[in-house]
Amino acid sequence: MFATPAFAQTTTGAAAAGGGLASFVGFAPLLLVFVVFYFLMIRPQQRRMRDLQRSVSSVKKGDEVVTAGGHIGRVSKVNDTEVEVDFGNGQKHRVVKATLAEVRTLGSKPAND
Image (cartoon, rainbow, N blue to C red; front, top):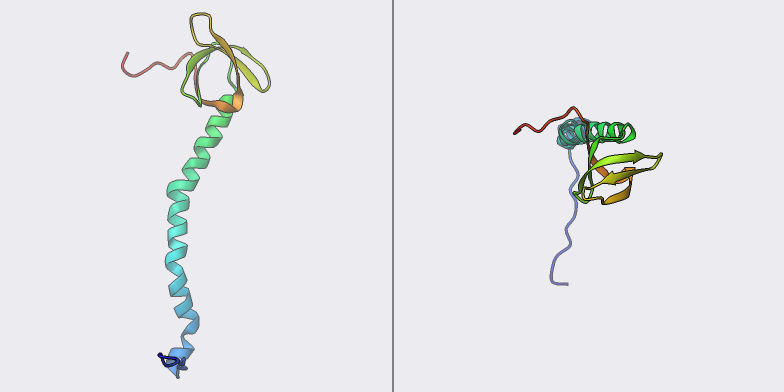
């Protein structure tokens, strides 16, 4: 009513012929961002998850573990899906293996000792 309708203008000659290259140039930055994200974020995260799954599946009696809740204890018994963790002072809890955030083997020693 108050605004006049806008009409699209057609392209002419050389501008219309380069349409395929122009669309690739517009799409290339998105492709580049995805490649950078893959190598800087996605791939290292997959590697960390694979290492964690490997260490959780190979947990054994005597290993020190950190649960997802941040509790640190020593493994006293291992089943297929659960571990029994001794948190000290006679407190033993059964913990699902999938909730372990870190497994520290007997040989590992903190850097500040």
